[in-house]
Length: 599
Ligand SMILES: *[C@@H]1O[C@H](CO)[C@@H](O)[C@H](O)[C@H]1NC(C)=O
Ligand SMILES: *[C@@H]1O[C@H](CO)[C@@H](O)[C@H](O)[C@H]1NC(C)=O
Ligand SMILES: *[C@@H]1O[C@H](CO)[C@@H](O)[C@H](O)[C@H]1NC(C)=O
Ligand SMILES: *[C@@H]1O[C@H](CO)[C@@H](O)[C@H](O)[C@H]1NC(C)=O
Ligand SMILES: *[C@@H]1O[C@H](CO)[C@@H](O)[C@H](O)[C@H]1NC(C)=O
Ligand SMILES: *[C@@H]1O[C@H](CO)[C@@H](O)[C@H](O)[C@H]1NC(C)=O
Ligand SMILES: *[C@@H]1O[C@H](CO)[C@@H](O)[C@H](O)[C@H]1NC(C)=O
Ligand SMILES: *[C@@H]1O[C@H](CO)[C@@H](O)[C@H](O)[C@H]1NC(C)=O
Image 1 (tube, rainbow, N blue to C red):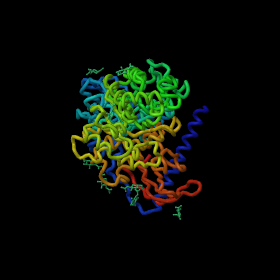
Image 2 (cartoon, rainbow, N blue to C red):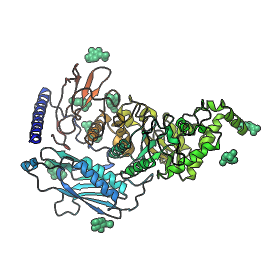
Image 3 (cartoon, rainbow, N blue to C red):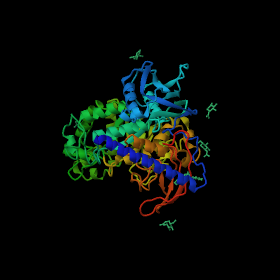
């Protein structure tokens, strides 16, 4: 009894807000000359597919949608698990039944009842450059055509996963008919990534992130079609991961509760693989490693020189070798990050036994830094890993780096052009535009960053594997990490996935921004704490009451804001200022967007 009246009470509120919205939109449309402001040609998919065509039909999707697997890999458990996950996302509102469903009357016939997934290859190995292409066809099953319903065709299960994500973004719950609809069908989409490496760095040393939080981040990465989680697991502040060969290393964790067991790490790798995401672990040497000495103080040159690690002892390299042997069992990805950045070697020269060793070997500290990095590379190579190193290694001794080295840019622009000119592969992460902890970098700088800038030769362009946005965690922990990553990481994700031509023409404030606003709301709907997009600083909360879909934007240091369009039907565009209570004042115009209906 209580439950029913409570539900009724909530419904009253919903009806009430619905009228409010009606009144509100009425006011808005009356107050200005009606000017259509939305570019109807925008497609609210993120990242934008390579090629697509759409039509003008609206199709309903059966909540009992069934999966028909075909091809050598069509019955893969990876595909089945993904189908179940996406069913939960797509049919969030239709899975539940209540006595009200009878009153509403259930629509008995659906246009789409089967999802056909054709996967040509049964090979499920997830490596760099795995084929992620797919085609997606969504059409009405008129009972005659054999190509009705939804078909995803891909060469690998990972292509099928990307196709499922795209399909889920075409599905919208319609609150009037209480069913899931696909607008603008039939859809024909042919898609593939521009770059094979589309990364996000997570730093679990500056702040520990619980396993469940890492899994949530992996889920959110799959929504933006990112495919590498660069796990910067250890740094000078803490050593949270278990290394069975050197069981005291994780004494360097902040506390005994902020740790990852080997089993935790394996679970993260497997969880990510089911979503088509590789984990690239990092052991950053010889700098950024002070925490190692908590468990094994001999790794420190002295108690006053705790970093870089002691270059003079073979023991140091024995520990690295043992760590990499253990980690090889956990991380199957072919790339392994060895760091090598920000190495200040001054205290090597002031530590007597290290200084003596340098003199014996006739090495400067700079040469000893090179010796350390190259010896660590040999260890990684001997374990069949391709070493990735931060750009300082390339900037300091490019000619001696192993030719398989992948150079990881971060300091600024112009590094990948130099690296690929020397035949190295490169990952773009220019900190000026792709560091998520730089809260003052707006979305459009993430969006317009171009990994191939300054590289004209097509064979050199191929050496750029892609790029990575970096979530350094000095000021990010579980309480705010997702809102610091999203939505700006998605701007980079589209840069890395979509064809350059498709996303570089026109004014991005008109072609990309409305879609990115919409994608932010999509992340929110799926439970991801993505922050407002056009706030003054990234991750800051909303500035006042309001809809996710009606966008406010800071203009400058003043309290002025611009209202953007609501892509889900009601379109508002105007400008104004907020008063002390955060109430907007505006001019606005209304229009309807064809792909999504007014609720
Ligand atoms: C709409 O978008 C298309 C594709 O992005 C572009 O070519 C066209 O110029 C845009 N139209 C307007 C009015 O902005
Ligand atoms: C839908 O598209 C078809 C084929 O392009 C066209 O003939 C028809 O007029 C369109 N219908 C509407 C309502 O726009
Ligand atoms: C996939 O499974 C279905 C039903 O379990 C079966 O009919 C079909 O032959 C299987 N296909 C392949 C390629 O194994
Ligand atoms: C240290 O390792 C190097 C390289 O493997 C080797 O040549 C050298 O003999 C070792 N030194 C000692 C004291 O074991
Ligand atoms: C030490 O190294 C320098 C430069 O690498 C070289 O010129 C010098 O001959 C070396 N000295 C000895 C004793 O090997
Ligand atoms: C898009 O908007 C931003 C912020 O208002 C502005 O800085 C930028 O110049 C605009 N870009 C274009 C292409 O108009
Ligand atoms: C804020 O905006 C108002 C109205 O446009 C203007 O008079 C004022 O100078 C602005 N203040 C600052 C600090 O920019
Ligand atoms: C708002 O609409 C006007 C035309 O009425 C247009 O010039 C302006 O670019 C639009 N602003 C945004 C942010 O879409």
